[in-house]
Structure formats: structure tokens, C-alpha cells
Image (cartoon, rainbow, N blue to C red; front, top):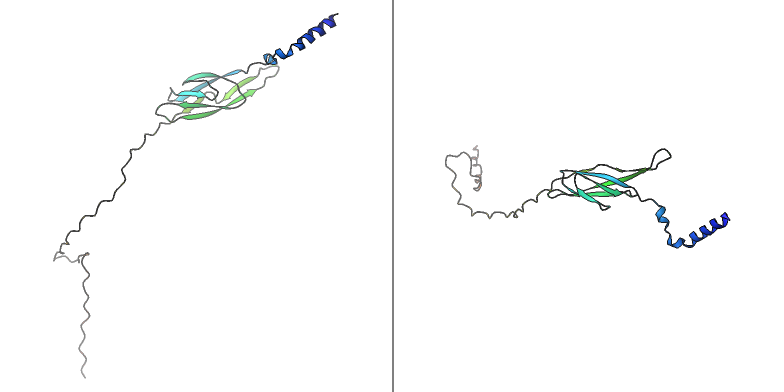
Length: 164
């Protein structure tokens, strides 16, 4: 008789199987605490999984099987991103399974934004000044004026013909 009741109960359970979700037996993925820090502090840190905060702080993220990133922003500093790996260690009979992140804490050194350089006007060449009248070389100078025409070289004087 006990067998008949057990089989009938199992059959009734299977009849309503479509309305029962087997997901209820799955455990929810564990959450991981991730510490977020920046230098200078006060940056807005947002994970690619959703949670975010102002540094220094900690957020709880679901332990996913894929890496995620943390994006940091702060006024007058360049934005930065840091990739984060999720490391799952399976448990055994003596130790429970664990989930950690690498790196933890997630730290970033924000670089100051360089202010834009002032726009310089394009260089225009100066107009040449009108040439001044060449000043005569001083009479006492041993050097000729480089701007004047080279002196004409006189042919050597002819020697008188020898007489016989």
C-alpha cells in the first residue's frame, strides 16, 4: 500500500511539473565585495555590471564568469578604466567554494587633464622695409664695401720692348 501512495504522489507531482520551476533549486550567484579606490579620492567609480560609488568605497557585484571593468571619472582629470577578473575557487568537503576578484582593491591613479594650449595666430612674414640709400664706405676703412660693385682689375702695364 505504501508503494501505491508513493507512486501516486510522484505521478501527481509530475503532472504539475510544467508549473514548477527547477530554478528554485539553483542557488543565487554569490555576491563579491569589491573595494574601489582612487588618487585623488572622490572620483565617481562605476562597474560595467552596474553598481558604482564615490571613492573610496566598496560595492557588491554578482560573481559573474566574465571579467568586468571599473570606469573612473573626476572633473579636471582624465577618465580611466581598470579591468577586473573574477576568480572562482571550487570547494571540497573540507573548504567551501570562494569567489574573489583580481585586483582587490581596484585602485587607479588619475592623471590631470592638460588645459588646452592657447591658440596662436598664424605667423605672417614681415613686409620688407624699403632699402635705404647705401652709405658711402668711409674713406679710412681698409675693407671695401661688400654691397658695392667689385673694383675693376686693370691689366698689367706692358713692358717696353727690349732694344738690340
